[in-house]
Length: 253
Image (tube, rainbow, N blue to C red; front, side, top):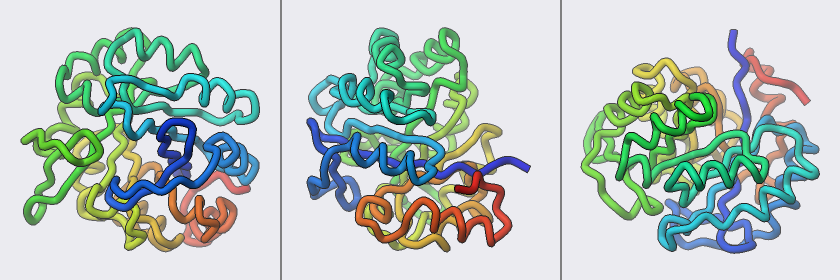
């Protein structure tokens, strides 16, 4: 049976760790690397850094942050936000990232998915999808922090991303993100059941029970968590402990 991963998501604006609700109303929290180190010491499985304003300014500002992070943190690191070219991927990997999450540039030029997968392997290429519900059982893919329409059906886009070479899907429910009201289980299940690659559920965790639901019912392979960790509502150990008691295979602390 596969191991389910717990991932700490750190949204970054400039030098600051930030958090919003539905990707808006960003609030400064602190130094992103201090939080990454804390979660690593608590037993997190992976770290996800997203430059939340990168696409808006056509750049990724995480190079220095990731370089510093790798001095203290020894779990896989994924970097996203503003990755537009193979050169951007090169730079992020050179700074210490293990995987690259791409949303906007993949939507605008899907062949970038194949180019990254061909050069670095599918395990490096994470397709990031920001999903908004538009009808029962239907979601549209967005970009620019859930502000820009694409007209793409999320499930079909995830399937195409896999066919182009993506090795993982980072699936964020914009409707649920930051609300702490639970994941969009129907969304996660719809994507997880159509692609044979890992799906990371993101957006909505308010309690460890939400983790159990999205894994057991939504069939998520990994869960990205932000608010409940950042605001010290639950620790990595507490979340993993509840998951383990629910018979979920997870690396215990």
